Image (cartoon, rainbow, N blue to C red; front, side):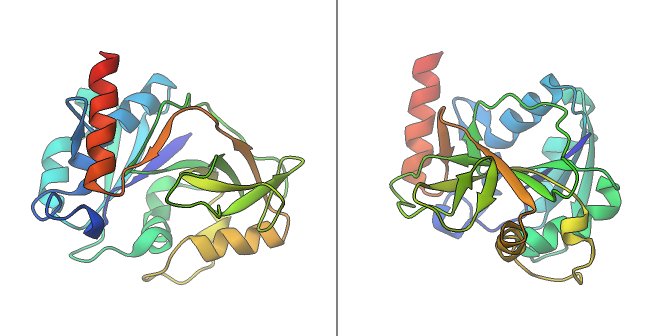
Length: 222
């Protein structure tokens, strides 16, 4: 099983920290955010990893190399000078990801989830990891009903930025700049998404304040 880590975005809300550094390379607990994901995937035996790059990509090329220092084989999906958004980035990387379901991980979240070699059931295009709604997203994104992801429900949850996706979710979409969310919503309406609620610690590192809070938490844990 392969994985893709999204690392191409500009990180506007993190400025000025991201003026000269891609957001996934910002550090918390003395380590780059991107490194936590790579190490967690490798620990699960998932060593074929695609990382997309655009903004300040030279730093990512230098940090990642070929992945051997992480015990991984890392393939770079270069989007040029401007990121293709989440959907466009994954669509561009499909030739590197192959025909089997893969893990997709946002490079700017932190969690201590235990990855596995996860398979999708027949007729399912994705498995989403959902979390209790944080303060910055009180309305949530999706709900769970008997393991299925739906767009509306009595107990809404937030998409964590971590999922297993079937390439078929994106393969028929034309290449270009587009978000992933509308494709997930359409798949949910069609009954093609499943999911789980992850209630352990998770952080969307969307602001310098959240990065600082995560850094303090990780340093105290050490």
